Length: 560
Image 1 (tube, rainbow, N blue to C red):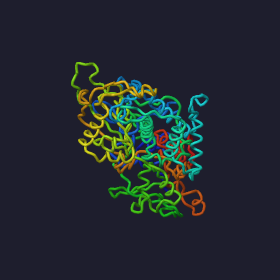
Image 2 (cartoon, helix red, strand yellow; image 1 turned 180 degrees about the vertical axis):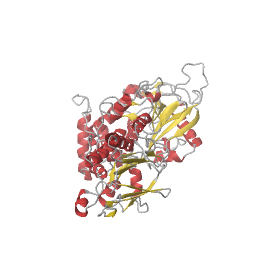
Image 3 (cartoon, helix red, strand yellow; image 1 turned 120 degrees about the vertical axis):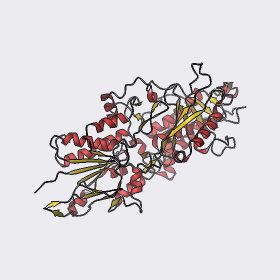
Image 4 (cartoon, helix red, strand yellow; image 1 turned 180 degrees about the horizontal axis):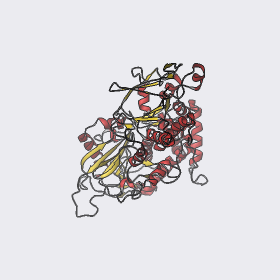
């Protein structure tokens, strides 16, 4: 009787899938224990990691940052393969950009002191939500951020919210209101296009909310669960980019795999599994319990399948018309998938045309521009600025003096961006820049005397500075059928338990005991299956290791 080697099929050649493949191969290659295969629906490896080129610069269409270098496995790999070193200043690797210029709609440049006061408020509130120690809590300043945040949290939860129902968005806005209530007098700014200090503070606060939306992928912070924020973990240390591209890490993981082990263009349409007793059929050997159907009509059988597709694909896969899993996933799994959040974050890259004054050494400079917009219901809004630009927070070079500018979009604005033509995008961005850079700029300071007697500071007009664009490039994660979004978040109504539930293999242990099922037929990996590092590449990495180790332990392999 021929004994079949266990066949493990990994669906998806992103960080989670290739990490699992790397671990399984290196741990079992000496005894050739498994038949291993990675199937990828797209034409490239990397998944939501996609290093590309634009305007002569290396760019990241997807994952960009190593979020803390202390203990990060991604940083360790990047160091080992020397991907952090480059003679080119790719993606801010020559150091941080100059201090941003924060300008309010209509051309009012805000002084760093005014911006910093609200920025510090926002940062401390998010630190409190995430369970971090807030700096300066022992100070005797007029406003103690920590006490205010704690008070606001209690107010929010007592107003019908309760644990698991409080959103980050409502917490932030109630805290901002409490902050305003704590300040007895609000200065009215005279002669500044009807901007009051309160309106400016709200605009700066909203700017940071929009940045937070891109961090979390929650299109609306009112859908982001407050309690789960304290479970999220960051690595300590500096946040950096990878000079030679994030894809170099992926390529390193894949480099040890034999040729042909990764199969591209193999889009999975259905996964059949056996939640009940699986009987022996051939020569006394059990058939492989899982059947994977591909879009070309072919079928592959497997003993174990590690599913690393995005949460967005899983959400679509549990729909009534999908049939991605046959039989359908059990209720406990589908309910967790439904409750968790999965948002869209897109990047917009714009190539600056050559400036008019090329004899000037500063001709190619564009400021790190932060934009504070009027409220949506304000009659003072510039009517020609498109709605999809109003919730982006900044526009800046990808590194100092680069001619490639970058802006981030989240939620419905990110989806709209995918549907716009290049001409519509250039027109919308140009109109917005004109509103911010073409007017005389009054520098507004936090001091009340200076607020009423703003110092005129002109940055020149957009046309004078030659702010014109020759081409654009945008990511399209929302409409890409292989992803259907960018990364996961814990939505109001869900919790970290749902992330753990998503990570549970099928069939469940209780089912195995009662029905005699073959174990570990379907395993789940990917950033959305990690309770404390979801939404990150290192979370995906850890999940791939977890599922590979689960299988190695199942087969009592050394090194599991």
